[in-house]
Image 1 (spheres, helix red, strand yellow):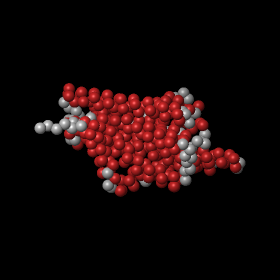
Image 2 (cartoon, helix red, strand yellow):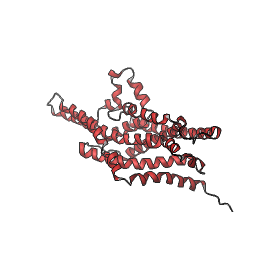
Image 3 (cartoon, helix red, strand yellow):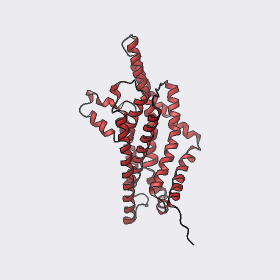
Length: 300
């Protein structure tokens, strides 16, 4: 007698099974939280000291001018702290999301995933949910330490909009990671090099350590705005700019790229686009697997 399995229940179990490894297993080693949460503050501190040096170099004693300069420096330091938080998610997308299927292939586990009667989107969805939780713990450590160490002052005026922007950014960002997971698997050994290639350039064009609006400065003409538009294809760019506007509403307008509502609308669109592309690339990957029979072959 054969038993039928509810496909929804099966996929939910697959999601939880893949997320469990990252929610529980990854936090069994406390030293990882220290290395992933505390040590990144050293890189953040370098930019904080640079921005604090701007305030000490202000050539005036006027109280109003000093107050404006202090507010601008506080915003820049806060930008760096938020950028450090978002870097944790971006690195997780690159190394624990996009490269994961390729690593599973190298370890010989991919054929098990392919034979399992589940949706491949459920597999990637579980990886994304677990990755968000795992990285959120480390990002929270970085955020709290950054606030208390560097004395950043946030102005939380609209918490619901802030949470909406944050979660939509993560959905779009991990949708991109799901798309990259299939592409990396098809690219084979170039996956590692692609992840390495996409690290530092994205730090620059996404404005992790400085406001993306700085590219609109005439000194960057004519390619500054092109960099901003190209960088906005990375959800972290728009998400960071929107979060910075919500947490530092008094920051100079020259720091702003687009209005928060516009960026939120674009992020929703990017989330749909990346999930559609992820599903399409997964289907194409499975088609290649059936046609060539080499998808699970190691070192290919």
